[in-house]
Length: 94
Image (cartoon, rainbow, N blue to C red; front, side, top):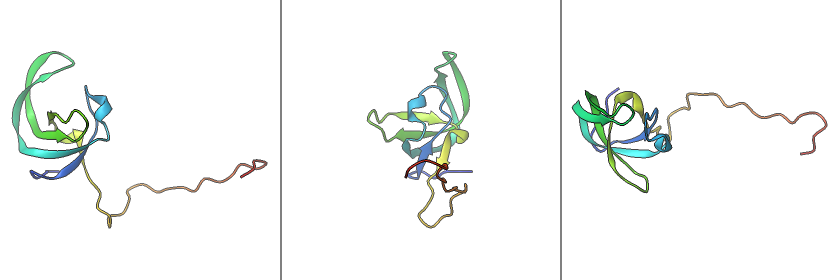
């Protein structure tokens, strides 16, 4: 799955900034090999990633690998999961 510059995405699978899982972001640079600091091991590593501006209160730009991004679902796209109606338990008041 590839993303275009300017595309809105949902952040996921964060390895360090876990509070941004589910946050909205915008792609600011295309997929390319980038060297960045792995904040868990404190070592530099090069891997294909996108530059993404996280649209949160901090609003910083991060390197995100493709598995850390998810497309926004459009209003006419079906939901991938099926919802199940909750049924009241016998004897409970509604």
